Length: 195
Image (cartoon, rainbow, N blue to C red; front, side, top):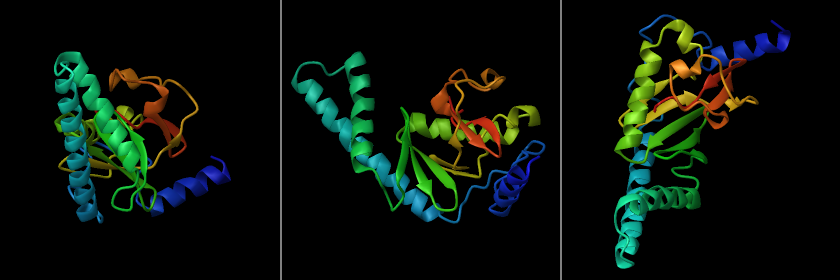
C-alpha cells in the first residue's frame, strides 16, 4: 500500500466510513445525526414529485393521452424535471437523479438517496438489506450503507469510477453500468444496487 492510499484509508476510518465491510449481518443504523433534516427533504421531495406528476397527468388527460406508456414516461420525466429545476433542497445540493430516487450531498463526505415514490422507497430498503446481509466477498463490491430510514439511505460519497463494468457485480444487480459505479476506499464499488 502506498503512503497516499494509507493516508486515505486512515482519513476515511476517522470519519466512520467502513473500508472493510466485515462479517454479516452488518449494522445499518435507523437514525443519522441529520435524520430530522433528511426526513424534511424526503417529505419535500415527495410533495414536489406528487405535484409534478399530477400536473403531467392533468395535461395528458387534457390532450386525450392520459394512460399507458405515455403516462409512465411523463411521470418520470416530470418528476426528474421538477427535482432538477429545484436543485438544492434543505441546504443539500442535488448530485444525482435516478428513475425513482434523488441523491443529495450531505456534509462530511456523505450522500442521502431519497425515494420519490414507493418504488424508490423499496430500492432504499433493498440496498440496506443487501448491504446488511451480503457475504463479505460481495459486500466488497458495494458502497456501504451508513444509515437507513423510511424512504432514504445514507452512503459515503463515492468518487467517479473510470470503468464501465465491475467483475462480479452481476451477482448483486442486473443494472451494472458506469453511472452506477463509484470509487470508495481505493476500489470500484456499486453505488446503486437497489433494483
